[in-house]
Image (spheres, helix red, strand yellow):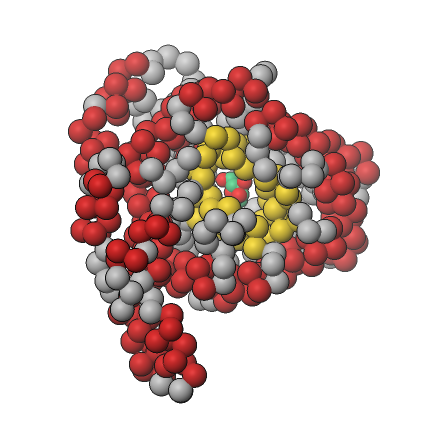
Length: 388
Ligand code: PSV
Ligand code: MN
């Protein structure tokens, strides 16, 4: 099997974007719990994100959600992040919380509503110029609840026109990534429900339009690693929103529900050229921490991705190819499972220490006193929450 020593150079290339909203309060439609020390501002969210990077060396970027993270001066925000060792990453648009979008945004029958949604994306692109962000991520809540409620074909056509207007406005180093999700909030049909629809829409736009794969956005049992392999093969995998699910779009800690699935996904990423300096795939988390502390929740998440990446890098690909080509079914399966069952945690801890990082980032953060400090300092104001 491949040795740990031979994969460390590749591990140093790992960079995971943290979602600003993971540091705010979240919950379900039943209750949003508040936590002492929760950020009140985007600056406080960035300060918390910097903790994750300080302890893990894995998370140099923070993704923004507009309008949740709106500020007057985005260049100043970029500098603020830079002073804390972070860059600003993907800008996520939001056309799902405005009354105007009740019956759709980029797909709406009313040209004025469509233009409002397009203008929102133009605003996001302006923000990207100031923040230095490369990716505009679009996820649409657009869809219908009842058969016959909308013209599902007409909505695809309007979506294509609207996306075309947005794509044309991108700077030459900027990309558009279109995220899909099979249901919720719409329950009968969703306008971008699957990778095929996202692919069809972005393929019509051009090279800088790609698919965003949110791991929580598939029906139970979906073979997500197959989708990864296919999108990489087509040159259209733009980014990931990592999280995990037991039931629907649970937004739980990545790797918590099904570490083996995360391993299989990362194996296909690596095998398909989606990892490393030559890849442009962006690895982002899209999670909410409803009941656990948020900063340790993010630390655990990036460590889970690192651990499964290390295991996937350990697969002996030469031996695997030989087993596959000779029809050695169980041998091939065994080679993959050998890597999956390898406990890389002690080796990763020692390697982290050798790079001046904490061997155990969870324990080091817990011992740092930061959590107690923010709980004491952040008194008054309004805690940030999913949606604000
Ligand atoms: C939609 O469920 C989604 O996955 C999109 O990425 C949104 O921007 C994000 O969640 C908000 O949490
Ligand atoms: Mn997402």
